View 1 (cartoon, one colour):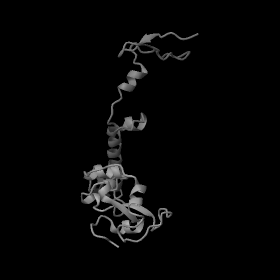
View 2: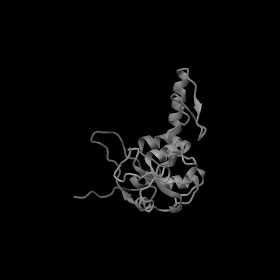
View 3: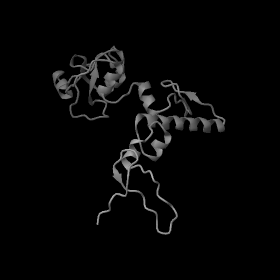
View 4: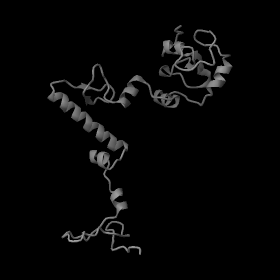
Amino acid sequence: MPRTPDTTCGTCGKPCYRTRPRPGSDWIPPVTHTCRACRSAAVVHGKVSTYKHRGCRCDECRQAWNEQCRRNQSAARARAGKSSRTCVVCAADFAPRSNQVTCSPACRKIHLGRLGDHASRAAYYGVEYETIDRLAVFERDGWMCGICELPVDRDAKWPDPGAPTLDHVVPMSRGGGHVLANVQLGHFYCNTVKGNRLEQAC
């Protein structure tokens, strides 16, 4: 037999159930009751407890958790007699490990400009972006490296130094866009040695 609601939510007014006391218990259910949906909607973001106990992973709660971790690290290093360091990206104090200059992996990616795929790198550097078919570029260049002008083995796979890669003629960090006119085929080794330089490196 289905149970009938015995009270209404004090916030939204919908019928809901109160927690019944255990047999022999002196606990009395509260007169005012809040349903589960209203309790979830009333979660306060930007708190460590929300991140830790409620499992919220929004930007505000994650930032509060990261700040708490940095404070704990700084306090631990202060107790151990070790100095703290300021992050070169967000200027937050953190406990460095060896020659570490950033406080988190996210700041490290920003510091090094390694943001993953081409779309995120183009957005970070503020350059033009368009979807490019790598194989079409390789076929256009005749499987010849645009850096050393030697043939590229189409069967080679990363991390083989001779593996085919997509090279930007003008690097993104220097204003070159991820467009068809600014990309070319290059050996993995040649592309790595060239880095973000404009001249041919090998």
